[in-house]
Length: 197
Ligand SMILES: Cc1cc2nc3c(=O)[nH]c(=O)nc-3n(C[C@H](O)[C@H](O)[C@H](O)COP(=O)(O)O)c2cc1C
Image (cartoon, rainbow, N blue to C red; front, side, top):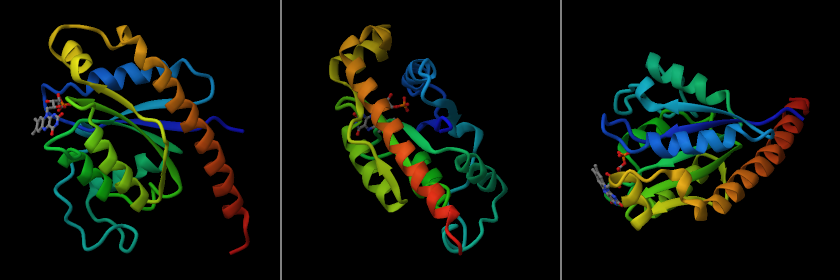
């Protein structure tokens, strides 16, 4: 079985963002594993306007060129790890916009979540789980939450995420679930594709 291709998507784009730190941390851990291939995806490379199409691409082809490039990129992957900031108890606007700018590319894929903030991005992650379901993605049970004193220590006191050893079991569990579900979903997708139309 081919190794699943996993995108690690950074949810914020502001110049002083924290998002690079957890994205790089998860990338370093995941890229050492032999059961998945990972790539970092930066929404800064896909500066899309606020959604301005006649419909979702479930119903009508997208016109915007950057959005078409975004959809093509997303289509390459079997699963996604969303590195999730929490803005006013929800997902960042830029991530929601990027999610809305694709549909078929997300379908029958797997999603995992790394949240950060005062409550570990928990409210943004929970919202993102529901959004994922609507986009026909399968969410992993386990997420990783960098919260409270841990978040403050890394954000403002120079602590490294690699020093937060108590988060390691959750990272491993989340990546294990991501691989298991991605392999299962890939098998099912292949069987679907092999059916006569
Ligand atoms: C517009 C805005 C709203 C925020 N709202 C929340 C929030 O609801 N909950 C929370 O824990 N942190 C909140 N924060 C603080 C963020 O957790 C913190 O700034 C974090 O670094 C944001 O991610 P980023 O640096 O990758 O953009 C907010 C920050 C911004 C800029």
